[in-house]
Image 1 (cartoon, rainbow, N blue to C red):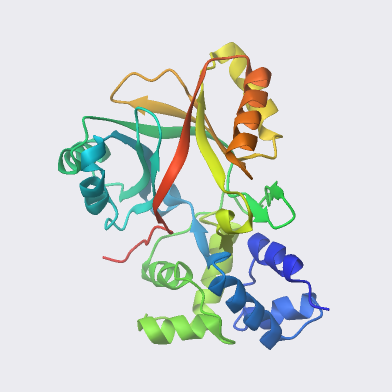
Image 2 (cartoon, rainbow, N blue to C red):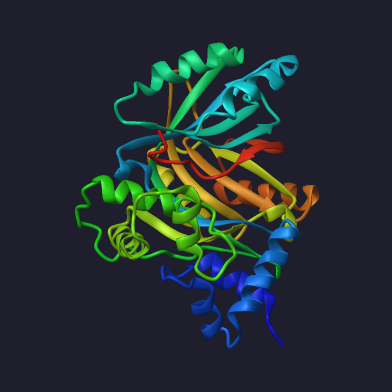
Length: 323
C-alpha cells in the first residue's frame, strides 16, 4: 500500500534535480510515477502541499533580506497589506498581536538602500513606527512539518561552501526556472521552461541547480507544506532578552526544542529593541502554544515577548531576477 506520509516526508527533504523527478521519487518509494504525481496533486488540492521549488540564499545572489515589523493602526491594516503584498521581494506577511502587528520579510538587490526603502514603505503603509531586524546568526531554518506531529530540521548540507558561483545570465535563467512551483507532470522542469518561455536548456537548468546546491547558493530544492493543514494551527514569533553571557547557552537549549522551527539572533534598527533572540514556535492549539512558551521561559529564565500569528496575508517564495 502506498505510504502518503512517507511521500510527504520525502519531498520535504529533497526533490531530485532530474528531468523526471517524480519517477525518481517513485523508484525510491517502490511506487510509480503516476501514483506519486496523483498523490501530490491530491495533497495540493487538500491544501496540504503549498509548493515545490528552490529555497535560495539571498545574500549569495547579491540580495539583502531582512525581517521587518510595522506598527500599523487597526483601521489602516487593509491599506498596509495592499501596499506591502504586491512587492516581489516580500515572501511572508503576517498580522500578529502586540505592539508591532505587521511582520514581513523583504529581499532587495544590494544596490538598494534598505533603510530608505523601508522608511518610504512605512509611510505608504501608514505605519506609526517600524523596525528592521537583520540576522547576525542563523541557528535553525526550514523545518518540515509531518502529519505525525513532528517538526524536524532536514539538516541540509553544503558540499562546497567555499565554491564561488558567478551570477551570470545562465545562472539567472536557471534560477528563474528553479524558483517556480514545480508542476505535477512527468517532465516537470521542461514544462516550466516551455510555459514561461525561459531561454535555457533543461539539462543546463539541472546541472546549474546541482552547482547552486553544492555551493549553498540554493539551500534546498524541496516541498513546503501548509503547517495549518497538518494540524499546526497555532504559532508565535517569540523574542527573548539575552546578554552575551547567556546567549550561547540559550541558543543551544532552544535549538533542540522540536516546537521551534526557526531560530535566529537579530539586531534591530532604527528603534531600540532589547530582544535579540527570535524563535518561531508552532503548536497544535493555542493552549499547547501557551504551555510551550511557558516551558521555554522556564528554560531561558529571561524576559521575552510573544507575537502570536492572527492572519496570514502572504506566504510565497521571493522571485529573483524577474525584472
